[in-house]
Amino acid sequence: MSITWVLRPEDVARIRFAFSPMWELVASLRTLQGPARQSIHLPWIKAVRPLIDGLDLAELFALVPPSGYIADFITPPPDTPMPEFGAELERVRSAPPELARAEVTKIAGTDPALLERFAADPEAGVARVADALERYWETCFAEFWPRVYGLLERDVLRRSRQLAQGGARELFAGLDPAVVWTGEQLIVDRPWCMLGGLHGDGLVLVPSAFWWPAVAVMSAPYQSTLVYPVLGVGTLWDQGPPPAPGALAALIGRSRARILLALAEPSTTSALAGRMELTPGAVSQHLGVLSGGGLTVGMRVGKQVVYRRTPAGDMLAGGTAMGAH
Image (cartoon, rainbow, N blue to C red):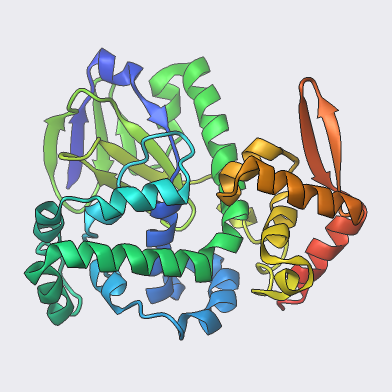
């Protein structure tokens, strides 16, 4: 069985890449429910297991079963190439309640009482789910996001160059074995059938680390979206397990810890602000403290200043990661 999309020339011209912190967050809920399916993420699972006890994830697990359909309203297709989590969360909060109710009725294999509660008052259900996603992000995902972000960003840049240089045929040939491009049709091997065209707004290609190694699709009433396995996922935790939650934060403060860990790759103040969901001014202040402590240093590249960790910063960040063994 497969999903077949007919792509007209204008659809091919509107292919775009994006990645989504919300998609990764929701996909990680499935990772928690089936660790054996994604043993590659065991370092992250071990790091967050102690934190989950303080969260009520029952309703999220009801909407994200271990297999099968997931309620689409909690994974809106990204509308910019590198969306911020806060912006995506607001899109979840503003999901039409009746649409959310209709999607929840399609879910099978989870707690029917929780699904019925949601369906009875979908407006309240959407609000509860958004709040639960925000708590889960802050507790279990935010400090690990820079590492995932870096992997997804590299994939998007690599694939975008591939599309520009070799066209759609070369792009789809290397995307995933489950995806076949005939020159007019994009055929995706999925456990249900569908044949149709796109609806005029192009196709979004979304790399994912936590959905790996599978592919996923979304279609009407959402923009047509294909989620595919990111390249290089095997290197995601090569630096050792994720940092012990709170260990580095207790030493230098949570925001500075996140910035220091994010500087595993050099970055500008504005790029860090987008990733950290802080204002550029706040990031600049934190970088001033980190630089004053000898942990980071700024280098002028053209008109921009790019920050990187110093050897002392590398040791502190690396020591935190090793401390999580």
